[in-house]
Image 1 (cartoon, one colour):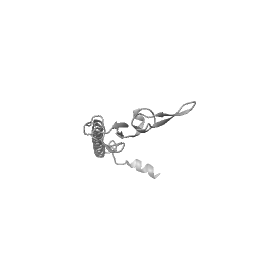
Image 2 (spheres, one colour; image 1 turned 135 degrees about the vertical axis):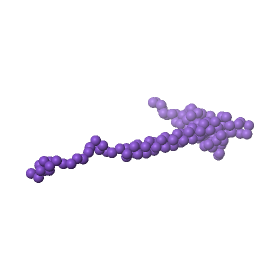
Image 3 (cartoon, helix red, strand yellow; image 1 turned 120 degrees about the horizontal axis):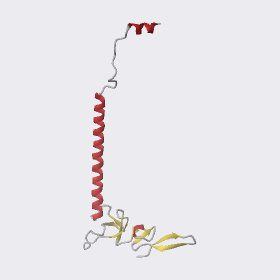
Image 4 (tube, rainbow, N blue to C red; image 1 turned 90 degrees about the vertical axis):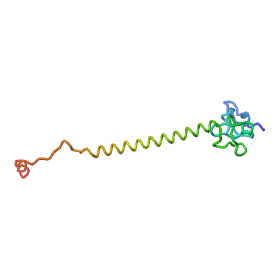
Length: 137
């Protein structure tokens, strides 16, 4: 596996430094700076790092299911992916419940306001004759 490098700019000069082991391309020296990996590692977009590809003997604890050279399956069987999927489902369900509650409250408010007369304190009465005569002059 050849050593990939990332560019470092300091105040005096420019240099290249090695990426983390397994990184094919990186932005820095950390495992979290990788964005492409050499086999037997695959880039996990969920973990944002190079993760060993699962083998039959390795299980699924700290590895990813590699779909092609250097790439992990987006929705593998790792615990992190399962938790991520469960969290996404919970967020969608909660969002739908909130929307239904808002629609229900809006509908109840509309129906409540529709029953109330707008000018309930006003009433009409017969005009007095002197009020009618004052309008003619």
